Image 1 (cartoon, one colour):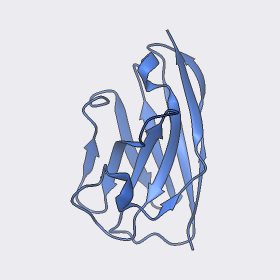
Image 2: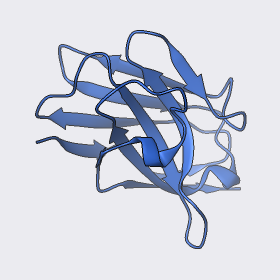
Image 3: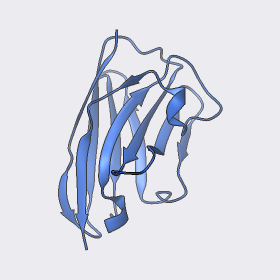
Length: 124
């Protein structure tokens, strides 16, 4: 059984930075995808960034060049470094883990386990 615990959200001004963390409790296959998603009320959950096990990272076009996803296997922690934040980045951010690799790592239905979320609010 996998439990994901996010932290690091908060309020920040536009052009600022935040770093989200996701602690992994339990076992996630080292080759499986892990990702960050975000959601605002009334909208579908959106894929932001993902690590495809052994085969690299994927980003949504809206965050390319501003966000960086990374995984520390020793600490069993997934990170999302967010820079040059914009008001439209305001959302609840969720960490997710799949039980396998996937060709569509930014699609929320590919993931089995989810954290409770951490709120990010960017003021302009």
